[in-house]
Image (cartoon, chains in turn purple, cyan):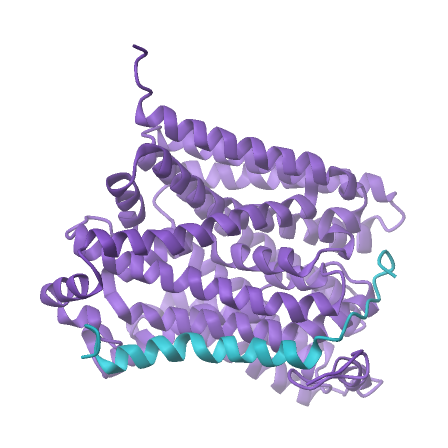
Length: 508
Length: 43
């Protein structure tokens, strides 16, 4: 009788199969990636379902599966405030921001967010490109390193490899399919990764609740251990710390309105009609993602109380409640969440150098294929830089993710929103607003956060970004054309809930 | 308590998901006929 395969062998087989599929997607997408536009926005040809899954998986990262489940474990239903922020953030992004943003970027033939802002404000000195490149580089470096850290931890907790081996393996696969296939490979692999995440977060809480003896049994047990876990305001109740905690949780979702790695998805859509369809799918998925993660954490609290690290609840549940092959699939889902973010960040940082610095400032006459090649090489270099940080500082993980998430969003979201909807926004206002939003978020973390109820840095980052963009714009000379393009775009695309002149067929 | 949870927790759960779903459904209804494209590759 042949010897039964060990649990690790089953998990490794599933992981190897998944990696092979990713590399195949990279190879399949490689034809599109031979031009700069093809490499960075897939030629602006993506359908609704691809941009919907791609934006969700890029936005969520390993934080959803390890961080939010851990939050559900730690604070119970108080974590629903995260769900509120994320669902609203995604819905507003698709319903309000995406259509005018797509129209603007198509008019300017922009393929990066700095590209769009530069043309929108006629920035002939390329100040926006340079400031953007610095901010994107700094934040993507931290974000990528944190995600690689999560890769190493996932491998070691599921299979028992060394932390370093997990980081090396994860990065090698990401670099292979991303540098070959560019944005198209990233977007389509996001679909695969998103479907896996969706199924995992649909099934895991159901199995967890079933193992707990049912919904009533689970809640009774959790409430007995700590009644605050069942309350919306958690352990603080309706107090200043409780309200600040809820605001911080809601604030996490605000980034969906204007983080550059998410806006790129809207830019890459085939047309505006894809956005109308994609929004419904994106919000439905994010509801399942977030509610599933919180309920998984709550069920985990009942089943496995007293974990030393609450962010390990998902690996613990998957290895304790499922056979080895399914645990392997769940490891793949964790890796999928991480990889879908890292690949997008690498493409974002690479584009900010190749498109915004090389093609638009330093080397405007360079052949498209040469720039595309530079983009591939730069993607590899950026990944290796993240590897260096991840290997030297393995302790940082989700704190750094939230830090980089807020830094990118605080720098870009207020400025992008003003540029889309407020005709009086000026170049000086946009540049000052980017710097102020970014600086406020960073300074808040370093000097204020610990002394002010741990309020999430994106709140002051957004406040400073909007205040400075509006204040400096009002103080400086109005745009030469009076910002008439804002009105023109609004006329064509309509409002969030009213059709514009560009709509065909019957509207609402 | 309703089905093991306080009423305000149920309210938060509904409020956290319903407005977002309504927003995108309304936007889809308003713009479902829009298939306009300026992308040169798609024209």
